[in-house]
Each structure stands twice: as structure tokens, then as C-alpha cells.
Image (cartoon, rainbow, N blue to C red; front, side):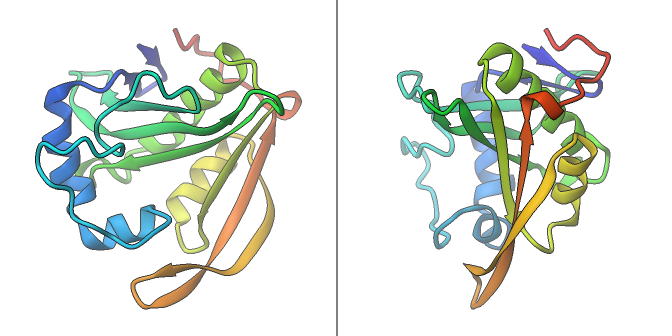
Length: 182
């Protein structure tokens, strides 16, 4: 497990799946805002890649996020779009409603940066988020991500086009927290 100050990132467990499905992916508004396509229900027992991990997929590394104090599941985190040639990847995360507003997002981003830069040897990490996602923007910027641009009206979400903000962080600009993440 990779550990931050408040959360740990670990492999997905089978008993995580019903919780993530019910609290993240069955929520039409959250699912519509988090995915790049229209919301669709996930059939129980399906092998949907948002829930079930394919360990052979090298360009996508999903984690379950747990509280360090007690091990309670609080969300999901992903390093995705991993490009080993250009040494870059994207960061994504989703916190359960009960875990929001507690600083977990900032800690998740910090741990994903450690994983991307130290463990994977990447040069660049990138985040795309809706322009009104203040929590994600704050978590990214607290970890040194820089706003690189706005993709105007690029996301169709529940009947309207929304802007997306593109943020990037280069390894040479990264300032790791003093905590060891392993």
C-alpha cells in the first residue's frame, strides 16, 4: 500500500465494488460529471472497468482509497493514459460523499504524484477537471499543479456544455511532501 498523511492507496478488493458502485457510479450527477461520456448504470456482477481491475492493462492503474486510521474505504484513484514513451500520465480520483471536504483529495493527489514520479519514473502528470470543481482544482494546486489552459465548452454534462481546466506538473517542479509514501 502507498500511504499519505491521511489515506492509503491499495489494490481494489472485491468487497470495495458494491460500495463504489452504490456511492459513486450509481449517482447520476456524480457519474455524469466524472466520466467522459453519458452516464450508464452498471449491472451488478458485470466486469465494468470502472470497478473491476484488469491487471494486464498497463496503461491504467486503479487504486482503492482507504483511511489510514481504520482502513475504511473512502474512494477510488487512478493513474491512467500512461504513456511510457513520453513518460506522462493522467490523474483521476473520486471520493465517496461521506469523505468529501476532509482533505483526502489533496492527500490522494500527493500519493499519486509519488507513485507517478518515483515509482513509475514519469516526467509529467496531468489533470483535467470541470472548471467548477473547486475541490479538485484546490487539491491539484496544493500539490504544485499549474493551470495550463481552459478547454472551453468541452464537456457535455447533463444538458449543458461546461469548461474543463487542464493542469500539469513536471517532475522537476514537484515538491514531494516530507512523508515517505511506502
